[in-house]
Length: 504
Ligand SMILES: Cc1cc2nc3c(=O)[nH]c(=O)nc-3n(C[C@H](O)[C@H](O)[C@H](O)COP(=O)(O)OP(=O)(O)OC[C@H]3O[C@@H](n4cnc5c(N)ncnc54)[C@H](O)[C@@H]3O)c2cc1C
Image (cartoon, rainbow, N blue to C red; front, top):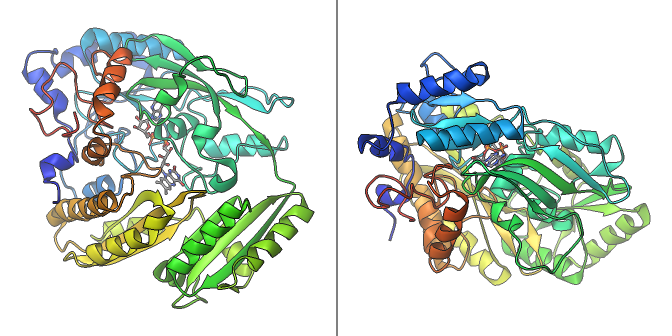
């Protein structure tokens, strides 16, 4: 059964209008005046139609709606705090005035985690951009949450270090955003996701308290940790203001290979064999025949598998030989394909013209155990292809584990008329989420939940939800932090009384 648009929870910005309509808050003008009085010189955007809408993220549907002049709400106020204590003061004032607060990093999120509303305050955290020294004995660095991820990586590389985290959005994302969305980068098979890199966080809770969670020791057995609660919490448990990260010495050498395989299934099998055998590539990427043909024009009707190894040169050379030996069904392809991938790996420039021309294009990522990947992949491709208006869907897998991997789908659709875009978009998303659920996959691998996935996450985690809600209430008792995203609703409102997500 596909979820209805209401259950889908998409574009559900009117939660706080109801709150105000119920007399729980003052008028917008009233609270704006108060913030102007206290933080007038830190206001970037006051919701005036002429100002840049700093409150949005990079979600495909938001961009589509903007390009085609479909209804998009304005932001209330965008404030730019310069320190943790200012974040705390702003949250305390928001609590006093009962104003919802949305944290914003680089705005590269793709699931409407940052979605504006006339009643909401957006805290643009990009001025929290201090970088401490590299602790070269232990391999640690402490940085402000607003530090741009590429700037951090370049800063580390210049000193012989790496974080080992290279998401495609590295040029736009902030460190706080990476943590808040539980991001993963292209080198994940060796270095892990951001959750394997965070040692300590400073956060401002929904009451304005400043809290430090984590420890600089490599491990402790001192009771359950609070730190993981904030990783992937999408600005609902607290606002991350500072992050201490674990580093690696920059790799001595990097060596890649490309193999062509008869089909996607054969590639999945080789990926599994490599990873389970203990071969430890930093990058593993398997493209289905459609994506292979689109991105690597010299290979037709086959799947392409890329791997990149990091380490001392003798080790990377041996690993490449061993990888080839363990993939007898594959044919080594030109080395230039690896170089081509490196050159183009961050390029998504084709999207904007397509969205502007009226096409829908987006990606949806899920994960599953090895034995479910192939059937899940084929089911999604078959079902989505059959939806009227869909022009194509393709997939790749770019993050492998000993017990499974992700699937990353890209679809292109033509809704015909702009106003038919949002329903078609929802229909495609619904289909992929349903298929993943029914084939034992998860509703998300790394883009997070935002305002697009809450209903499916609630279904997938039904038993955990009441506990998560109670834990959330400890950190954000009024439910002011990014209400409507992830699984949260305003705790004073009825969970079922609005277009807000159905996940409560
Ligand atoms: C072209 C493109 C490629 C991408 N590639 C990848 C990829 O390879 N891997 C991947 O994991 N993701 C990828 N993404 C998604 C996105 O870049 C990540 O989710 C990223 O972590 C978001 O960081 P940000 O600073 O831009 O956060 P924003 O978009 O500003 O915010 C995202 C969410 O985090 C919350 N948030 C932001 N900062 C804080 C903070 N300091 N404290 C509390 N909450 C906060 C926001 O409220 C929101 O819910 C890609 C996106 C694009 C557009």
